[in-house]
Length: 427
Image (cartoon, rainbow, N blue to C red):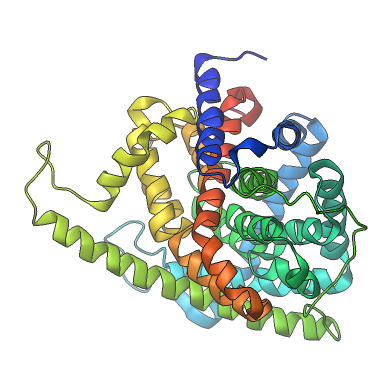
């Protein structure tokens, strides 16, 4: 195992991110040193187990194959409903290669199928006990109380609002720090439905895309817990308790009921994703048109992507990205924060190898794989206002800071990936 300067460079990202969170902490004297060591150690162990142990590497390849099988099965249903719009051979000559990839007909149907499948697996108890196992692990290693540990684990699979549903009865009794942590972890992770959608987008530019996306959401959960605890330290009155599998509203009467309710939930998610992309891309285009009218800088017109690339390029470099690629990588970070990770992944899929080499793509996949963006701020306020309406004002006061914690958590994961030798990822 050989560590190169590019790996050591990623240490700067770890130090920078921890330092930024400490600077905005509500109590700088209570830096959770033990938690920091444990959380980062857990992340490194997960990376080692997932990508270095032969058995787990084979399992991840199996996951990748399963996701491809799921995508192809979804494609069959999509072809039946939408015909050539879903990506089959069109009844005309295609003059613009790549234009046949229509997001609404290639990615959004995957969300429907995975939501239905997730609901079915939860009803059968498979995802339920997997979440409970991870919750027990987080409880013992990260010092979380039972209900927040369970919600953190469930969030990895179910999403930023669906995860807390399983401890709905406890939400009112959580401390301010625990409530903040749940919001932050929700923004640091993604849901099972979107994991498959991201893998579909990255399929042609990132080998084993599904394995990396799954690993990213799993590995970023401890990072979200750590950064949330740095920014809003835990209450000394918090006491550990047993892990109670409270299921809240996520119960199903039968397998068919689970599939139908999962499909309905998936439709709502797909519509939200599509609507959010339309609105935010439209707003960004308006801003770009205004910037285009301004005087050129450095011989080029200003744009959101160019400005964000400059702003976030130091952070991208600190994660281990070569400086010549830091502008493009920083732009992706900015796009993710402003326009959602879907837009960032689509843009990365279109970015050529001359701007992003394979190692940088892997680092950025982990750095982008999270719900921390402006749109998620509104989703969290709306979701928690329903789940725990009596704490709505408290959520409003925490949600923007939680977005920062979630954004930096995925960047911390990207930095840890940057620490690892290329050979671990088959490069």
